[in-house]
Image (cartoon, rainbow, N blue to C red; front, side, top):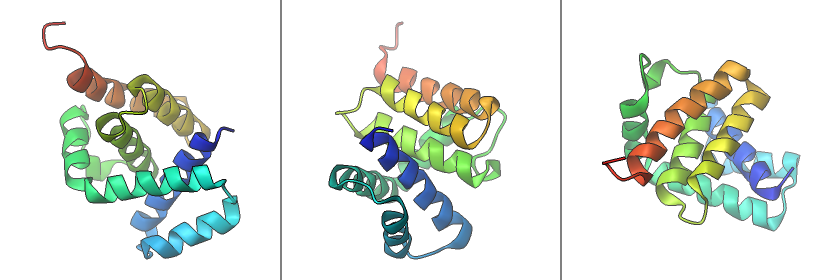
Length: 139
């Protein structure tokens, strides 16, 4: 597993736990760090993801709501919401991550922790965000 994948999976787990249990973010982060023992690079990237998502939660959630078809964000599982927030944050705010990489990573995490349907769902939502953000309007 790459260090970035470990960072993404850790970020998903942290976001999931924060919503499910309502822990303090730093407490949850410290527990994940002890259990997963990521490299310094992975920890830095994970913290960057969490900080970006927390600081831009309203915009990320509004973007997700616009691209969900026949679903409300609040009705998604905590896991699907966490995965979509990580992928959306990377597409919107991480210029050093190609959008297709962000989408693929989110899909793989969804398939690992969910099922093939979860992967397809995540792919559809994030691909729609990518097309809106990255492709010219006339294409």
